[in-house]
Length: 115
Length: 113
Image (tube, rainbow over all chains, first blue to last red; front, side, top):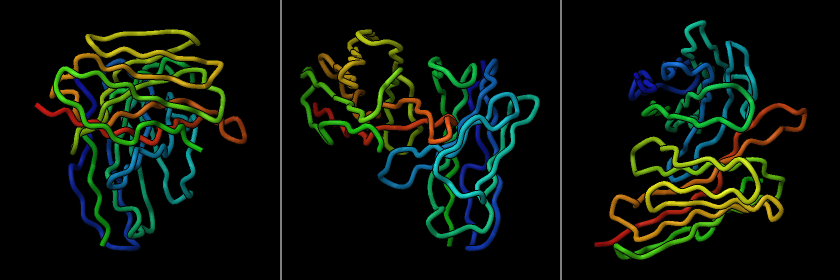
């Protein structure tokens, strides 16, 4: 069983640029959630995708957008990067959509630095 | 408001016990617990689905009091490998009924030899 993978591992961008982060979900999982984790803080929920549809969203502006593909892999896109976007971006996959069974398995994360 | 965890930090000697609490201002229907080691992703520990449910995994167990909107994580006979930051997490409905996932404030635990 392949675990959750993310690419790239590290990324450095400048303010105003755009970035795309990628996540491959664990085999058999159809739900992907994205989180932002600033240094020393807990993960903050960005959004969740279930069967290619956005299923829920946290308090992030529209310049954070995403996609889920038929194979359940996912992308996180961030436009007009700001310095405060510097963080570890985590994706987590799980079986099912909204509900009480979301045992989430996290990928290793992408460290984004915005200069 | 995210669930509040207590204590914020705790230092233990190997073999000692610890309790981490998670309290919510909103109704909890499920609680998840995670451990995150420095520089790594969170690792799922367990899920509690209904009030009064208790679960265990090795020497780590948890309880869920739905009425009090609280959950507690119990670490028995702690090992060095237990060091890390522990988060509770839960699913909430946003203002328009949309799904949100919320992590608690976190508890940093360090086990010393």
